[in-house]
Structures are given as C-alpha cells and as structure tokens.
Image 1 (cartoon, rainbow over the protein chains, first blue to last red):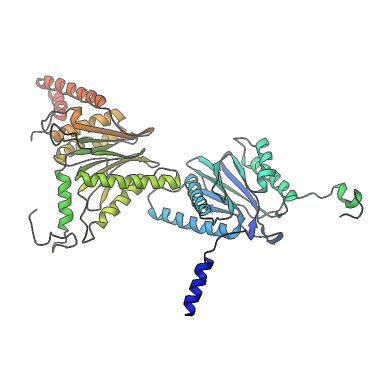
Image 2 (image 1 turned 45 degrees about the vertical axis):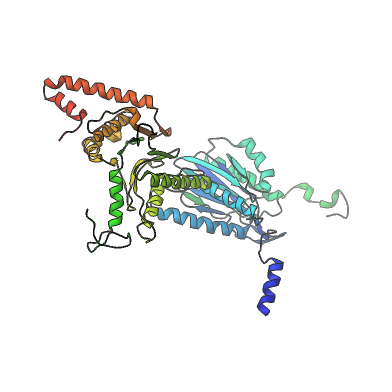
Length: 241
Length: 264
C-alpha cells in the first residue's frame, strides 16, 4: 500500500532531474593556434557562486594523443564529459588498427553530445575549447552548452570573449612562435585577472603539437596595483570605499 | 561437396569440425558472376561482369557506392548484397554524422564481418550468400578487402570472386607485384583484362561490364560506358598487334600470352 502511494506521488511529481543552474564553475579559457600547434590557457579556480572556493581545479585535460580540452562552466559536468571522452578514446584504442580519432572528430562528437542534451532540456553547463594537431594539421574549435560550435584561429569562453578576443584579433598572426604565443596569452590572462571577478592568480598553459601534449605546472602572474588612485580611494566621493 | 546429415542447420558442426551451411553459402558466391578488384597506393578499381536475365531485361547491379570514399562489388545472391550495401551506407552515414569524418575502411569491414558472423551462430538465421569486395580510401591509404559469408575478411592487393574467377586470379598473380606503382589508368586496364579472362572467349564489351574507381582526390564513382569501351578497344588493338607479331621471336610471344585468353 505504502509503495503504491509513493509511486503515485512520484508519477505526479516527475522524479527526473535536470540541470537548472551551475554550482561550481570555472571561468574563461583562451586558446589559439601557433606555428607548431595549438596553445590553451586557463586559471585553476572553481567558484561556488561568488566565493572563490577551489583553487586547484585543472580545467585543461588532454584527450587521446591528438587533442586538448579546456572547459569553463559547471565543473562536475566537465568531469562527466571527461568520462564520456575516456570511454570514446578507449574504444578507439581497442580497435588497434592504425586509425585514431583526431581533434576534428572529438570536436564533432562533443557537439553532438552537447546539442543532444540541450534538446532534452538537460544541458551540460559548459563552454568547451577543443584544440589539437593531427598529421601536421592544426585544429581549434569551440562548443557551447546549447550545441553552438565553430572553428577559428583563436577562441575564448565566457569573459574571455569580451576581454581577450579583441587583443587576440589585434595581435595574433599565423606564424606566431611559442614564446610569443605565451606572452600574448599572458597578456590576455592578466586583463582577465584584473577585470574578471571569478579569476584567480594561478594558471596553467597547455600546448599540443605533433610530438605530443605538455600541460605546464601552475604558476602566477605578476600584478601591479601601485596606482596613485588607489592611495586615497575615496578621494572622488568621501564616505565611499 | 555432397549432402550429409550435418548440413541442415548452420548451428550443427560436422564431426570434422565444419559448418556445412556456411560452406554452401560460399558456394553461392562462387556461382555468381565475376567481380575483380585491384589496388595501388593511391587508387582502387572494381570491375564486374553484368549478366542480364534476358535480352528484354536490364542488367543486375553489382557495384554499389557506399560513401564518397568507399564502394563495393558483390558476387552471389545479389539481393543479400543489396541489403548489406544499405547497412554499410548506414554505418558510414552514422559515423560521418557524429564525427564529421569518413569511416576508416578497416572499421567498416569489421562491422560487416561481425554482422556476417552472427548469421553463422543463430539457428533462426542463414548466412548471407554474397561475397563483397570492399574498395576504399582513408587516412591510412588505399584498401581492398574481401568479406566472406563466413564472417572472415582479408585485405588484398588484388582479388577476384565469382564464376571463373580463378582465371582472373591467375592473371593477376603474375602481375600484382607492380600494382602499387601503377597509374590509375593502368589499374583500370588490368581490371578489364582480368574481367576478360573470366569470360573465356566471350566478347568483352562495355555493355556487359561495370568499372568503378576510388582514389586520392577522386570520390568513388562508376565509369562511363563510353570510357570503358575506349579502354577495351585499346586492349583489343594491343592484342591484334601481338597476334600479328606471333611469327616473330620469343619476346613477342610473351606479350601475346599475356593478352590472349587462357585455353589450358
């Protein structure tokens, strides 16, 4: 009898769950193609709303031999995506036949996954950056939580779209060297650090070339807060802060 | 092969460890009209003999385009071949949809072989009575595979299936070492030669054969009848020349023995 009552209310209430809001989120990821491959950068912060709660979240991971994936948005959904991709790469390796999934294939697979979830009104709340190199061909693409996808020479998620991309549009070149690319990325990361509330001063830069993947150890950027206007902050309006 | 008490079900082993139903299915392939395939490093050519049921009817379709980069030629129960072609097209389309990238030929072939194997292990099914020559191009190069009703598959430099295919195989066995370096046109010519071998004296015209090519920068497509006839004509001319020079020394005789049909 009890079971039937519970079952009835479950049917009425619809026991299914779906993502409504993100809880632990990562902020911008920026990426660009450079001379020998593709380079991605992201900070290591996981925000819980306005609290900068987690400070060692790796938001860039390598996928198979040929791809790098960076994610912003809900961290648990990113981890779920990594599990999907892990299975995908596993089956690809199990064929053991000389063929392998390249960045283009992984990007399209992710697009299908994201779009499918969006259609069920249960999205994976992420903006993904997929970069990679296969047989000398560089690839860089993005997928959003509603399945919007595209390829470009440089991409960014979240605040990066507004703060970093203008810099990249002005200063990116086809044959930019690795050192120059890092400098350019750090320039963007610094702007994001100053202006994005959810950014923290702990970054990882990842690069991928035909030889393989390298994800750097976390490091911080030097910031400059010694502006004269900060000496007497309430100069403009007494009583404010 | 003679009838015996172990050949009624595909799920019955014979004491000698054979599955007769599977072997009978392979017989069906041997009875079908001939199909040949040849591969170089950059191209794969398929050619088939198209028999019409009568002068009033159209020819049977034995070559199917599966995707831009893969095609098949079949021999045996052509209805089974048609159904399997639909399956192969589906597999390719599904892969392209998810990965936006062509399905590697070796993986398609394994899917097909697994499907064929299922039919050798279910009491309510029968093996497919068709052999398929799968020609395709992918990242790892040009490939030619043969898929058997038994669920086996092998990769070949060149192969022939169907009735009197042994004549074509013998012809190709003598020449296959050079195939990798052949140009596209040389491959087509040799494919038609091989088909000619299976006709055993019957006249080769473009109306009774189909030729298809896939290669680097060239999606899978069937060649126009006119073009096929031109190649056949050029073969014929060479043969006439060789026959005329038959009186001459030994070198010419070698050339004529390669061009003329076998009568051993």
